[in-house]
Length: 173
Image 1 (cartoon, rainbow, N blue to C red):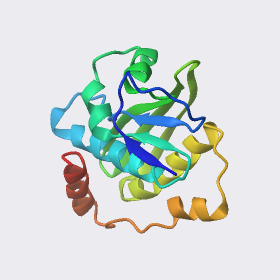
Image 2 (tube, rainbow, N blue to C red; image 1 turned 90 degrees about the vertical axis):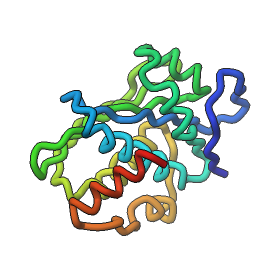
Image 3 (spheres, one colour; image 1 turned 45 degrees about the horizontal axis):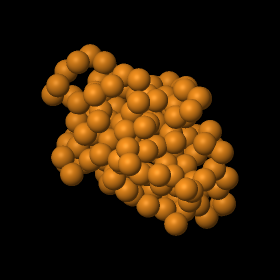
């Protein structure tokens, strides 16, 4: 089964299931007033990954607590007892959404990265696309019904202002 669990350096991993920590995505422009977009996106991405049986997702509060404490992803992975660390940047330019995602394997370092340029109203679909690519690069085989759990979800809204409010709320859960 899938679990959301707090990360702890004392957790011992007896399972071969991936334990994924999705760190809050940052806005490279440094605008503190826009950081909620990355925090909301990363929380929603973690919730999407959590839908898949056999994938453990480290609780968002745990990942947020260690975010920024170390630039060394092996250290972050150890702090969170995670096998995989996902992090990235997200920024908006008008109605465009520019996202860079990287996944590190605790023992091997960077194993996957990709940049996305999408229309802002497509952010919800982008979360599904990123989740599918992350799972594939973790070696998680998905059944058709599992893929549907990720892709057959309706966005909370198509209105970009309403979605902006949704992300603000997600970043404060």
